[in-house]
Image (tube, rainbow, N blue to C red; front, top):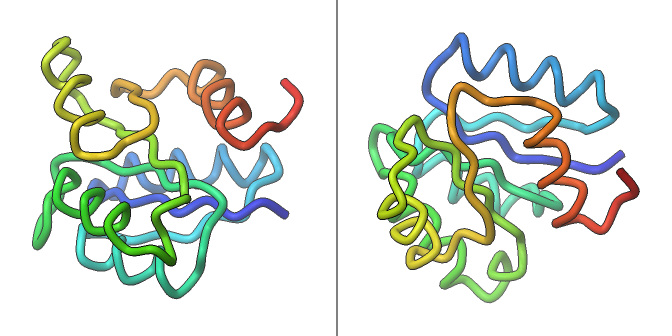
Length: 123
């Protein structure tokens, strides 16, 4: 089973997204703040990280920079999740090291397409 690390501080978003990902055949590991996300990326070595950008303790921008700076986790694709849909938010996410970007509220078919594309899985 393909492991995804979901870094999300909002309980409702976290529960909804983790349930839907599990139903689609993914194993989901959850972190509730950026530092926990960095720690779990190293400990769990997920195939992909879904990173909320507005997080407590360590924001998603800095958490992504730390994940990408560590040789053990640098190759893990990171998809930024944010309620901010401005072009500058996408640019900022890519500059922080994110591999892709999606907006909230999450449209599951679109997000699953991005996840599968990043992981080389069939649609």
